[in-house]
Image (cartoon, rainbow over all chains, first blue to last red; front, side):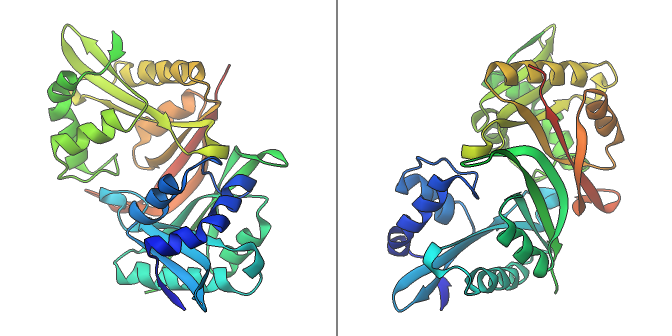
Amino acid sequence: MIREMTRSDFESFWPTFSAVIQAQETYAFDADMTLEQAYHLWCELPLKTYVWEEQGVILGSYYLKANAMGPSRHICNCGYMVAEAARGRGIARALCEHSQRVAVERGFKAMQFNSVVSTNTQAVQLWKALGFNIIGTIPDAYQHGQLGYVDCYIMYKWLDT
Amino acid sequence: MIREMTRSDFESFWPTFSAVIQAQETYAFDADMTLEQAYHLWCELPLKTYVWEEQGVILGSYYLKANAMGPSRHICNCGYMVAEAARGRGIARALCEHSQRVAVERGFKAMQFNSVVSTNTQAVQLWKALGFNIIGTIPDAYQHGQLGYVDCYIMYKWLDT
């Protein structure tokens, strides 16, 4: 079930969130971020934050926010996270499809991912399958926990309305 | 003279700032932003904000901030504004050269402009001349005050150290 994230959901999701940022393989977040800082970033700054819940367990989450203001306010941005044990089951896909519907409902016309780590091939392939294009490559944009500097992609989709 | 911007500098620069955001031709800022909101964005959120001052008049300004956190914290971002009457005199160039030196001093390795409006050819040409490359094009990313939807460029430079 996809529903809005509560503070208590975030606390139960924190082990997943913390593992993701500590790995330094996918997100440009500080590895030593506190739960408070992460909650602010993931749940308070965005317009909306949702979870994928199964039998009381939070297996995934995403946020939706405007990517810019004024003349670029029609473009939104999302970030997705899925618990390691729940990967490969289509949860990220379902969250991304849900986020596109919510974005359209809120009047956004396009969705942009500002920094998809190029070595995160599962994510890149999934976003491509969902209609996102790589519109730019930022050289050496991400200091990967295992691989050193790697490129990031900017991915973009004009949403179906 | 280039020096750090004060609150009082921002107030005297406000007519320029306001004209730029109202034109909706270059910045993805809300056209109806208040002075307080603009001050927060331009002077409080960034790491540093500087002005170009001549005989007590503020003719230009730029901010410097990190463009992301954690594994991408080596990339900074800047924004520049020059008063209309002072354009074509090399002030933007001088501000950008200054910003690159400050960025290197603060440990940044690269500089990224997330949204250069493609029709702002003077800016695009200047950034190219200063060593920035267009690394991506965001289709229809900016609703231009005169031209409707136009593309934006993402520009990037690995800084000389």
